[in-house]
Image (tube, rainbow over all chains, first blue to last red; front, top):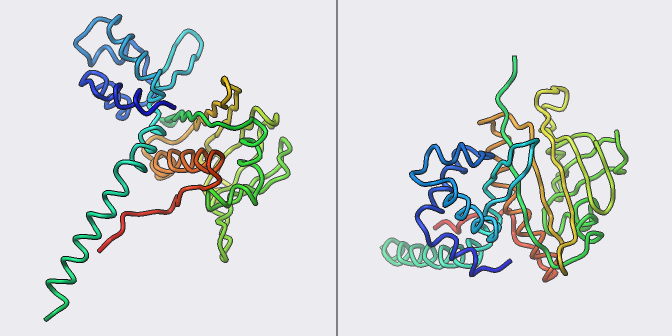
Length: 105
Length: 154
């Protein structure tokens, strides 16, 4: 999947709020999500469309309902590539510093 | 009395074929390379399956039944901690749906009938993103991710 789409989808406070709402309660309908958003259903639908295109939200139809699920798999890929390796380095530096300060006593 | 349940749906797109994705889930010698576990069963509806840690101890961590198997597009299994195998309420349900999507495969893993707030719900919501990222990496590059990785502590 397109990493650009993931970052673009995340670069908007409403869409991050939608992900927060789904992370609290997964599988909500548009109506349930709109109860916590100060916007028209149509705008919310557009935002959800962008999240779905980025594969950050997946939808399942159950009868007449369309339920939305947060899909953290692309975020995990971003974490693997852009966060974890820096986390390792930073913790490595702290480790060296600690050795440096404590080791030579 | 009904218990409160929760569901998760995970989706990943993989440059591969449905056959390879299905095999990667159901063949122990492939699964252990990106999952660190083997899924062992004859994959016939009604049969048992076991999720076994691929190390010397070979601990059976999860167990369940094969509910539906239609290779290479669909697999439905029940899923429980090995220690709770006899408790029907502890069984959740996992569905793998594999669909060709342009030159890729869209793999959807739906995990339903989980007890809300349970240790299992908590565990799988951390586990599936890591396993699916590792599966994608393994099938696309031949290299899985270290799914047991933790931040390197000082």
